Image (tube, rainbow, N blue to C red; front, side, top):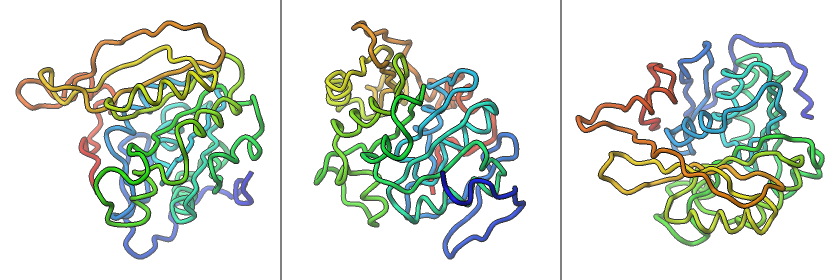
Length: 264
């Protein structure tokens, strides 16, 4: 655990140059973000909603970035504990200060570490749910990123899907769940890596901007030690025919006033 995990709740924390404080529009929770780094977006909100934690689950958020998903889970599931792992020290520091700001350091612990080291750091077989918004592009592919932080978040330079899946397998207890959001065009790559690591894909939902559009991303749940058999959920549409946020999207945001685009 981090040395600061027992600190008392604070009403304010230091904002560093270029950072801003955003309201998550749920339970008064706020999030420190900085343009030029990977910021909260709709995909993260959808994943936090899709994973549907059970009561008192021990959760691991792998590649937590600025801690957005971890804080959304803490805001909506007060009886769950989250171990959040982030490689980039700057992002981990931002996440840690957001945790202190919201007074949830007894339930959300930020660990600055390589995801491949997470089982050694957190222990094996102790988590019942893992959430992950992994880099969408393979190393060397995709559009160039403006900053090193964005490149690491968007391109898998330091971690393969196989390594991610194997680390998740070691962290999870038997029957534990792994939930991720990932580009639809690469869905098979992720499912193949999960299957090979002993995490069987069991539930998938395609996400479409509109009904006539192909899916951009998918939400996937895999279960450790499960038998084969994949359930396809009703497609999730972000906008209706008139261009307004859909009921499904509003449900994910719980009808909040949060920025539905999640842009920095």
